[in-house]
Image (cartoon, rainbow, N blue to C red; front, top):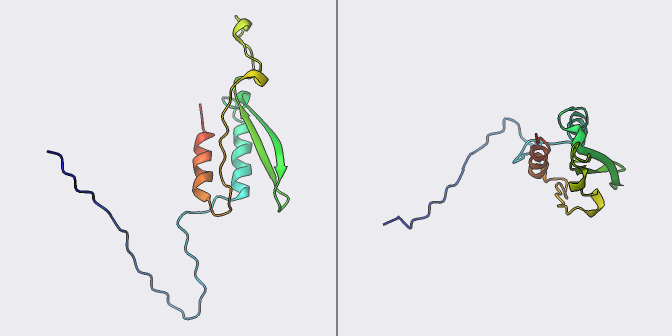
Amino acid sequence: GASSHKYHYTLSFSLTFPFDHDTVYLAYCYPYTYTDLQHDLWRLENDSARNKFVRRRPLCHTLAGNVCDLLTITDFMPPKNDSSTFIPIRERQGIVITSRVHPGETNSSLVMNGVLKFR
């Protein structure tokens, strides 16, 4: 029969620092900055294959004064040959995807970046 053993893995490492009294920071993921976000949104808005499906507008401002964007991703245009199947945006069902609620949640920003690379 199938083995019922569960395996658990542990990553271990050691660090040696050459100087006493240094301040050292360790991170479990590389940074994804507000500048990275703005650059990725600019690329999205300027990508002719994707920009016809995206509308970007400010949702609010953060405590630091940065714009927190709201993206709407949908097919905005009615079908060319049969507009009877077109559902106005306000009547459509939708989903909300959020990320980066807290500053240290870099991983969620990277996941959202992947979501926005739709084709």
